[in-house]
Structure formats: structure tokens, C-alpha cells
Amino acid sequence: MSVMQEVNVLSGPIPNTVLKKQSLGQYVFDALKSNYDQPSCMTDAVTGNTHSYKYVLEITCQLANSLLRNGCKKNDIIAISSENSMHVLYPVIASFYIGLGVAPLNENYTERELKQLLSISTPKIVFCSIRTAYKFIKIKEKCEYIEKIVLLDSLELLHDTESLMSFISFKPNTNIVETFQPLECDWNDTIALIMCSSGTTGIPKNVVVTHRNVIVTIENIKDPSVGAYLCLKPGDHTITFLPMFHAFGLITILKQIVSGYHTLLISKFEITLFLSTVQKIKSIRHAYGMTEATMLLTISPVNDFKLGSSGKLVPYLMGKIIDSNTKENLKAYKTGELCFKGDVIMKGYLKNEVATIETIDKDGWLHTGDYGFYDSDGHFYIQGRLKEIIRYNGFQISPTEIEMLLLEHPQIKDAAVFGIPHKTAEEVPAAFVVLQPNSSLTENDVKKFVANELVYYKHLRGEVKFLDEIPRTLTGKFNKSNLSKLFLELSL
Image 1 (tube, rainbow, N blue to C red):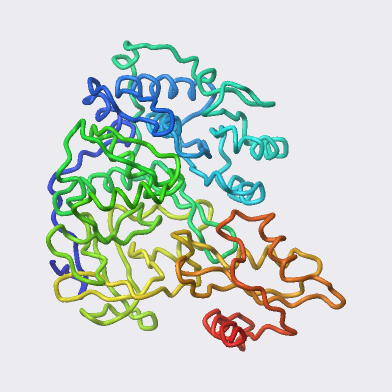
Image 2 (image 1 turned 90 degrees about the horizontal axis):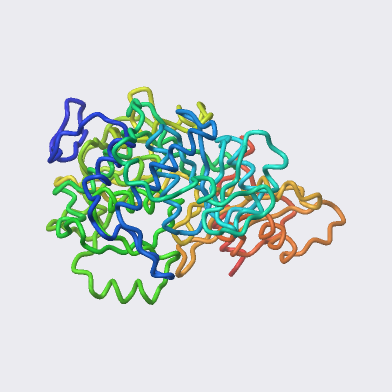
């Protein structure tokens, strides 16, 4: 632990390597080329199909050329929505080569949710699985920015779509590896990823992650101070089941690929496989991160575990705790808001300057909305959150988004959504609802209305209680903490 010039600011360890300023495309291309002779890059756990590093390099180079032929240019955006598969990575890597931004989207999002997000990122091309294609076909009919829909996992075409192999016109071509050259991009400014992050404005925000953000995060995972992969070498086997629309899942598999590992890709989380694997693992580490920091902020050192701690800062990062009212930097063991600054912090929220300014201050500090403290050894402890976000089974849910939907119902006059404790899922969304006069709406009707419009984890799994009036503060706002307490009292 070291203290910077600003009082009560901690810094991560000195990095083990000096980073070369380069585009993410060049970084990944060079890594794939250095592992060209490795026979196994990825294996699909369901089909058993394996793609070599040679194949991955050739297909991504050809796909990059196809994107350029189809009118994509530097700083354009593509979107991807699919279950985990090897094919998901190919548009991602190809886009990095030529400076396109990639917007991964949860394949379970409804048409309504996709419309909201796509209207902000405005992708030229959508790569999707056949299961999600129908939603994008409907959206494309009503918007001008989507030019093509490419199916990742099917040769059977739907209306107004084409297959990945047709789009690429793929054929084995070893020579392309020698002739292809990734485009030069400013690693500080070029968008690599546009990740979804739940906000309190009602619509999930689009987090802009740059080439530098991704490179630094991958190098952090490789750094000996983090030690996440100290025992692995090129050719060793790893398992990945985290969804690739999530920053943690996508960055993790990118790290495995640039390191020359063989990755067994599981399409979804399997509890039996997970539990059997945990029994064989020699080390389990606590970590803390967020999409706005690309992925990782703190992690427990290999031989320095502390009960309740989320670990120490990773390289290329500074951290502090501030008083939420005075904004004063606090000393060790004093509880306040966690703030971080460094090379992994997002560029901002896409087309949302207000939210960006509210989250990243003028000095570059990311205000997390979480509160906790650090100890005298530099371990951080997360105690809760200042935000009203509901955390359900690892997903973050904006209560405002559900409230806005409820208020669209003609029989609902007012609504407040908040989280209530749950034994296994941490929290579930619950609601107070005020009905319009003479309404016959039931609790089940309200739950079905939400279920029809929003992805499964945003459903009202808690009760819906009907009130004549929902208590508000003097300024007309909801105090979600008080509403949650009132809800639990009424449930006794």
C-alpha cells in the first residue's frame, strides 16, 4: 500500500510490465499470431467442436475485411446478441481489428428493451442467434440504422437475414494472416465495447469502454500481484460459462485467448458442473468490480486473504473513501463512498453527458455509489450501496425502469418499486401500486404485465401491494429504504 500526494488516497501495486501503446485490435492480433500453432483455442462443450488458433485468426481477419466491404468504418457500432458460443467472439475480435465499437446485448432482453438500447448505440449490423433474430427483424423494419442482420448459429435463413459464413464468404486462407494489418486506433479514445449497466433513470445506460480500458484490464489479470492465472501456461485448459454480454464474461474469455489457453465454452451456467469444479479448485478469491471500471477494481491477494474483505487495489488504479456530504477523503476504517481513478475507468456513458458528469467528477474519480472502508493494510470492505439498484442473483435491476413501465398501464395511477430481502437471491423486486378509480386489476395482472415486457430477472418476484397513496418525501420523491421497511411491516 502506498499513499499518493492527495491525502488518504491508496494506489495499486506497480505493474509487472510496461504497456505498449497500441490498439486493442493489434494487441489481440499479435497474441493470436504468436499462438498460431496451438491446436485448440476454443471447444464448444455441447457439440465438441474445436477451433484452432489458426482458424480463429483466419476467420476474424476475413470477417474484418467483410465488415469493411459492407460499409463499416472506424468508430461505427455493431451489436451482438446470442447465447454463449464460439461464433460470438469472431465479430468482437474482427471489430477490434478495424476500430468498430461492439455492443453486446443480453439475449433474453425483450423487444421493448432492445429498442431502448439500440436507439442509443445505433448499430449498423446486428450479429445474433436464430433464437433472438425474430426480435431484431421486427426492430429493423421500424428503424433506419440497422443495415444487416447476420445469424451466428444457423445456415437456415429467416426473412431479411444472412448467415455468418455467407457474410464472410469464408474459405481457408493462410495467406491472409501475412497480408492483413489491423487499423491504427487511438487506444485512449477509440470505443471497444458498449456494455449495459443498470441506472436509476429508467433505461439501462450504455457504458463506453475504450481499447486502453480492455488492454489494461487483461494485463491486470495477468499481473503477478493479481495472480489469477499464475499456474497456467499456453495450451492449458480453462472453463468459461459466464455470459459474454457481461463485462466479466467477455473480458475473461478475451484474456484466455490472448494468453494461448484452450477454453471449454459452456453455453449456460450448470450448477452441478460448477459445484463439482469448485471441489477441485485450490483457491477461491474475493473480488470487487463494476462495468464502469471495465471489470475489476480489487481482488484478494493470493496469500493475504481477510474475512469480509474484497481485496486490494489492482495495478493502474487509485482508490479512496469519501464522506458523502462533505466529499472529504476519509482515513482507514472510516465508512464512506468508494471512489476509484485509473486506466480501467470507462470513458463515460454513451450519449448521456449528465449521467457521466454525475458519475465521474472533474478530477477523473469514478463515484461508485457503494459504501465501505479500507483497513490499515489497504484491504477494501464493501458494506452496502448508496444507490437504489436491486441486486437479484448477480443481476442489477433499475427500480425506476419497472416503475416507468407500470405507469404506462391505463389502470395504474402510481407505482413504487424497491428490493426486499430474499434467502437465496439477495433481493427481489416488489411494488406498491395505486390503482385508477374503478380498476379491477389484481396482483397477478400486474405481475403478468411486467413479465410480458421485461427480461425474466426484472419480474416482480416479490409481492405487489395496493395502497390508496404511496408515501413520499417533502420533495415528492420516494424514500426506497422506508418503503421497503413499510412493505415488510405490512407483510407481518
